[in-house]
Image (cartoon, rainbow, N blue to C red; front, side, top):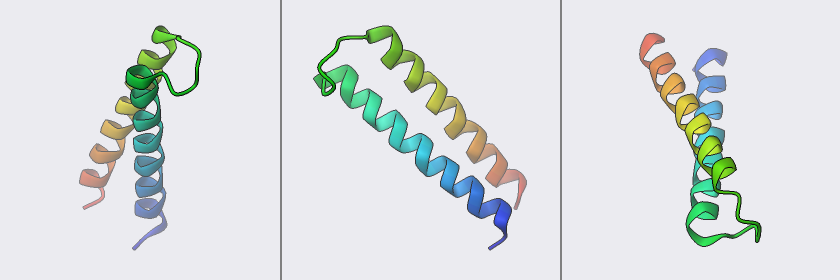
Length: 61
């Protein structure tokens, strides 16, 4: 596996973790502070990074 694929898979994993954490915060309020706009923006940003990572993996085939 090349370094390009490794970095892309790691970025997909990190974006997935960020998306999951802020989705859980939006639903269950795990951080204690109710900032809905910030949660939604982080979810959108990490979803965009997930999409870009998948597109990059498809390009590297």
